[in-house]
Structure formats: structure tokens, C-alpha cells
Length: 71
Image 1 (spheres, rainbow, N blue to C red):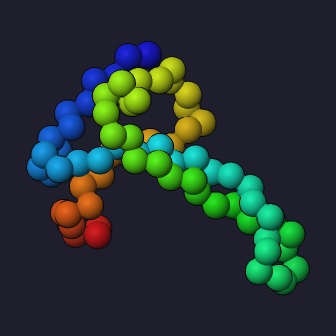
Image 2: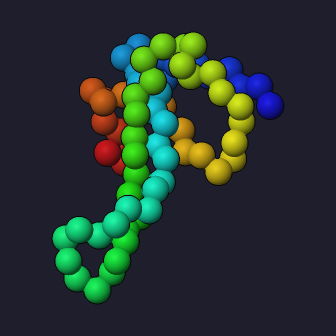
């Protein structure tokens, strides 16, 4: 697949993020021994955004300075 994104949705100050779910050990106590957490990383340039399509990954285009009716 090849995707081209309009990076100016909701303005020009958007960020592209990799959000990867990971299983981490529970170090806070309780009955669960692990928890599902998200490792997130803001991509700062187009070269780092290029990657092979993987439907199991989570990618987010967001503007931290804008809110809509959903928040």
C-alpha cells in the first residue's frame, strides 16, 4: 500500500505518532502480573514516518493545540 496524508487537517501544527501496545510487568502490586500499555513516539520528520504498512500497528495524526466536540 501507499498512503499520502493531508497533514494540514485542523491546522498546520499537527503531529504524527507511532503508538505501539506492549505488555509490561505490573510493578504496582495487585493480582495482575502484567498490564497492556502504549509506547508512543512523535515522528519529527517525513523520513522517519516512512515505513512498510502493517495493519497491526497504531498510527495517529493529531493536533495537540486543537479540540473538537470529541475532545
